[in-house]
Image (cartoon, rainbow, N blue to C red):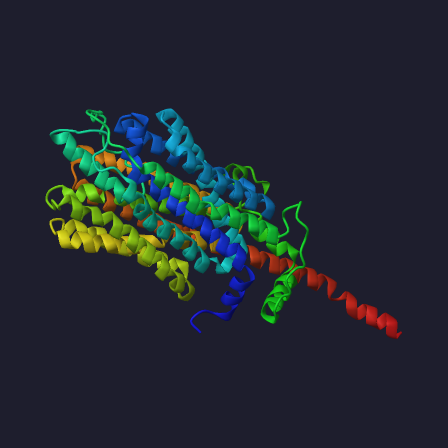
Length: 516
């Protein structure tokens, strides 16, 4: 078979939990990608400028980062983890239902911040729970988890598009109309709000067009509603709801029973040792178990996070500004044609994550990381060389999405495997990725604004090379950490041998005494 029977047995045993976490991440992808296309309609709804409304979305991204940082605090028990997922999913549905009622930009910013906090908690908990559930076999299931983010991000613009107004708040003249159309086309195909383009000079002139964007948010709330229901049902199946009677546990089949006995033979300390290290960043820094560990242990956390800071930063910046690059000289694509670039980028990310599911079973995460990082750099180099070719821009956008698609789940599986599922790798990586996506988008946007559109590809190339250098450094510290573990195990073996030698001569004397 293409998939090992052990992997299939693992999935069957944990199918309900796994599918629930996947569905939560599909909702997560819908929420992230849904906000970008509606930014101009929300500007009209709140009577604010474009610069004000973009900072509203920045507040959502910032609170998502905070939620990712503190989300690990809920991992201590399955009850607390599922309860946090349930509450966060409910909050997201409620927030999206009340967004059409927010007619003040400050109220809208508060609503976005609350939803971002809930999404960040979901991001961290779902990753931690899957890693804890599957441990050394988690790579395949993490790839599937992040496929559902891309799938949700691909579907959500299709839901929003029919309800968006075409003319904005009013009739703009001259260059204002062109900039407004450009800004809308860019955001309609990007799941991330732009922070780097200054549009504050656009004001509301003329009459306003009636917007139906409220229906889009209400549909989003309905689509998200089955997610908390699924989490609640999982809590019921796991007998974690006190008011519900406990059901009869399901009998294990022979494959699951064999696996249960194998894990039982490893001892109860294995599970505590494997899952005990995952927490929020602040509690990790105060963990007494981290004292006396080598520098390589901490550098693996830092370098893994920095690699994802760079690569997820490229994803955010590319999805946000590829339209800007496409319509500018020397490419000068028509606005409608350039609007497909971001869609192609997210479609290939989704396809790449789907393709990585079987590949992660056949190849080790470190090999996939090396291949994907090198491929991303080569693609950016080719885009720089053929910067005047519109055809290669579409081809390069697809290749860039494919190579960047599976870096995050591969890095997560790789670092957790290095650290033997101790430490705080999941929380550090999720937080670093979110921070990189937020910071790089602002940085690249400001550089494009001052230096021109050509700097877009140059920034991507530089960031990609920095990520690759950091990955090489991560490999070196992995080797140092492996040598440290080998030396520690040898010392333990020598101590055991010396203890055995000291106890060895006593046995023959005892036998002689007995015989006499």
